Length: 101
Image (tube, rainbow, N blue to C red):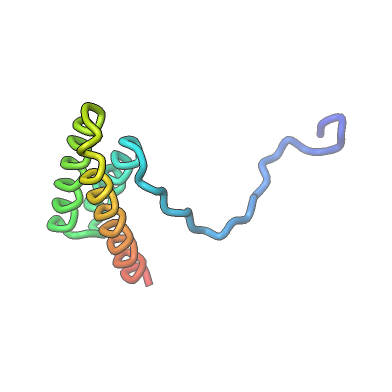
């Protein structure tokens, strides 16, 4: 026990059990999608076909980030592809949620 009477034990903080999906606004967020996809593929929660589609989209987006650093003309294309990847991940997560039921 500490001087204040509280023990130094861990305490449980209750939550909703779900995390909010991250908006894809940076290279780091896009890379995290790729890591999530790899884990889902290894755990067989998604098909190799879906994983390949996500990987190809991520690869394209990372190249577009590099191009957008050079010229503003690439930003609209980058935004379009980011929106597509967000929709693809929303659909993928919905499929995984149905499989877990």
